Length: 342
Image 1: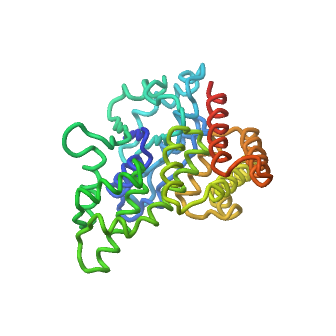
Image 2: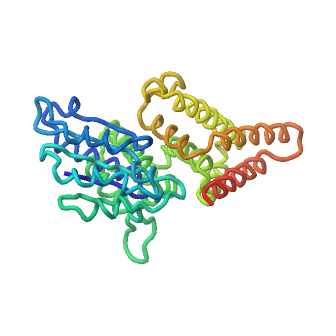
Image 3: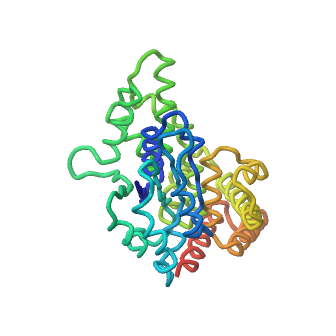
């Protein structure tokens, strides 16, 4: 069976994949799972993987990351991938192919891809689009509020409406950060021997939430999302707990990691080894850095790093304030992203 998981919300997409893995796992799924990168993948290699039979298991899982986004709308795509499209209906019933498309800044709409349109017309195709949940509502609870309420219930947390509103204000619409926060609240509730979470409890744990927002800010700046960057920056700086220089330091670190990651990818280094070399071993942050690297031009990253160093020099010379420097960095990164995608 073919599955396509795509959309603007990374966390929901990852949850769909986790749910499928849990459903298919008979104790041997790990040894019958293959993960392929869409970049440089050929139809022939993919055919070999989806036609292979599972070993000592009832199921085989082949995951391809960002194939549709990588191919884009270039000419000749359907012709090059016609053998794959023709063989897809004959894939063994034990096998499951997952095309997972992670959201990227200003990415082409997956559903407009000629390959996506061709695949979606086949029988036995499971397609799920994960959209960013709305954090507002004209009446009643918002989509995001309803999601938080349901997620908290799954974790056996009784959370008040005021606490939900506070979480949304602190975390925005980043479901992964919100889920991490709910895990912290669950631990906190267990420690106080009471599964109810109030607005006061959220206020007590606010510093942890600010840390989550800080890294979200760095990601949004690096990815050139100007509106989100300014909104997060204002929230964080107004709290008085984080200085602009701290944000700039984290941006510089992220850009340096991206430059080094680009060099390693160019050399064909495997993901696990990249993590060892750059010192990022957890899957989520490592995947995020690789994704940001692939979506950025190496020259742009080097140029951004030079701009950071120049801004830092001007701040130290007293030519501009730290906050102005950070605001100019956000605008500069966003402008280069728009130029790259135009």
